[in-house]
Amino acid sequence: TLPMSAQSASYQLGFRSYLRACWAEAPWTYGPVWAISLAALAAVLALSHRHLAALRRQPISARQQLYLTVAWLPVVLGLTSAAALLAPRSSLLWWLLQQQYEAVALSSFGSLLFLLLVLASAADGATPDSTLGDRMLRRLAAGGPQQHFATPPLCCLLRPCWPAFHLGAAHLLLVYRLLQQFVLATPLLAFLDLWASLSLSPSDAAATRTACLLLKRVSTLLALWALFSLYQSTHQVLRQWNTTRKFVAIKAVLLLELIQDPLIALAVHEAPGAAPPHP
Image (cartoon, rainbow, N blue to C red; front, side):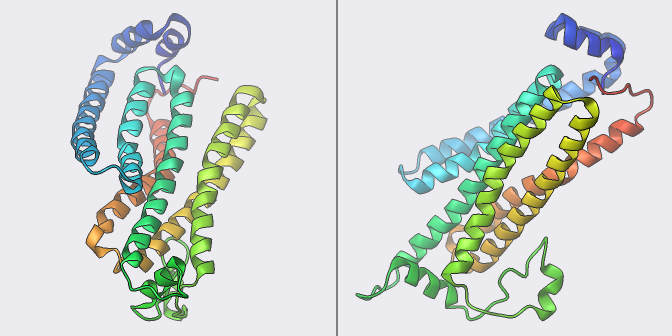
């Protein structure tokens, strides 16, 4: 939350006036914040550049394209966050872009796990009456019955009484649909939130945003549950592709997305001398 003079400069006099007003109001607050943020952005861009360059050197394939889509996520989040910090007037636009690309990255990671499972299963011996789907299920069943879906964040506490079973086609379809609902719900709820903020009265907008927030939390929890379950079921089969670090990176983004807004709201609310949000 900005001082009132900085808010006025930001919304009435333009970007340069906003920066000058912030610097004049509290240089020892905004200066370190901008410096740390830009340094973090530079580090993210440098690491991402190396990673993206290594991926582009790989042979062109569907797997490479999925890797590239996921690898662009920190770049998108870093650039949009820095833009929103330097120009808060555009923060809703950047937040909308973040929500959309987050959904795209999660969908790409789920598709990547399914693609790697296909590649691992294609190497198995085929019989005249077997399909690729049959070989995938046999490959997953090679480790014996497991407690599939008894994973965080929804069903981990039920693990002591959760039955062990083999995955079937219906289970994989359920995982796919749980991931897809997040891909569809995230941009739709973000657009609804943005429309409510711009079009409705303050009380109606607050109620709509609360409903969107709750629905987004439910959607994220279901997507995390599906991602945990898919990772647990394919971990041994896909060990050669080292999916653990990729899974942890995607999971960390989703978990931080769940808790960052309440933490920032709490910090801003308790900040001494904080002005009320600009309407």
